[in-house]
Image 1 (cartoon, each protein chain N blue to C red):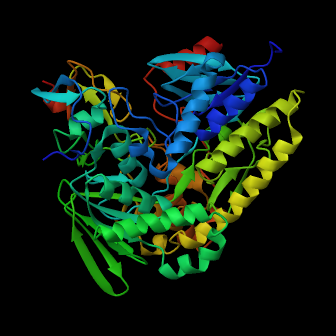
Image 2: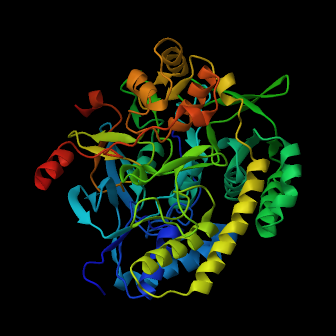
Length: 460
Length: 96
């Protein structure tokens, strides 16, 4: 292997693992950076070693996939420099700033595969900062990773496949599911059904979860409008509307989310070109069908570069690694590369149908009241954003950030970013694509005081 | 009343820690967040409104669950495992 070749993969979910496996199979020894404690990412997240549940209990229909992905990484661990519990908090051309177990370091790379995954897309409702309110992904982590439910009686609300999956997993584990409330209408799902037949197994799983929820006697509603969480100091109920009718359920926990959003900060810090993607309703780093970004030597794979799901992430991880190999002159199987790209195209078709079944609630911003907290880090309210747009001339997101501090808190816009863009677009009566995107700033996640300064001094 | 409810995996080794000065037991493999929220109804108070908070994303994205120990060390509760003898507080006033 060329000693100057130092490939680094950020992320150890399905995309990062398959990328690592592919590089190792061709004689390379990548570094794999994982913010998690064990490989698997979020979807195939593993429970701590002291837990004893069978993988089938954790992953359900995805058990074989989870075992295959974990196994793929175990097989190559001797040939990769695997770094768990490691945060990449900054990236500049050719170098990453890392923090592992409180220790800072820098890591040079010749080629970088970014496989940073996704988190829930959040659209707040009044009361969403109350204890007992979690994202759908968070509700799932509590169960899968800790064996806990987020409460004794849980309402799940929002839209997307995860809504039904998590509700099903809770009901199956013995938690009481008070209601499953989908903001998407049933008519959209019926219209989307032919497109979803491209992936009949996924459609069948969705219908199975829905059937099991109904068999458990769970209230399942479509076309709802979330109104508010009730509670003083913690959640005691949830109120929603079905047409003109206001409905309520008592509960001590709420899980919610509106599909997923990509983690794109590293691509942004590294200067990758972004473009608005209407399917994801977000600005995403551009990539070619193989996963090459606009910057030579930087590759994108998995949900971190547009939400396509776990199966696509595995394929994209392999394909991005093959692109890297091609670019450094290592022979790869061209027929296999073409086959992977064809499979990814097919999943993209399914993904479009899925968006029809679980559309973004584009009336969210119009229904958001001025006193709604939009930033949970600093408790900035919707009215402050509208005021900045109306009287201070905030026409795009970075100006809005400078004027209101939105996106400047500890989460760096991960949670508030999509919702804030919707509010600004609504306030200006323009398409959400016209308000731009928050520029990423290091550190992308909080680091101990002094770490950034020490890194800067070391670099000088 | 605690927030989280254990549904499985109750036969792990107990780990002793304190929460606001009170002796508590968690289980080996619990995160700090799980250890606290199976005992209490909050992790911390918002530094802006003082309202109680109990985490949100549980996967290291939202940064809502940073808590402090009695000695002032800051921990991200969802991604830090509980350890024997940790002395955790839900607010700085309770550190004394």
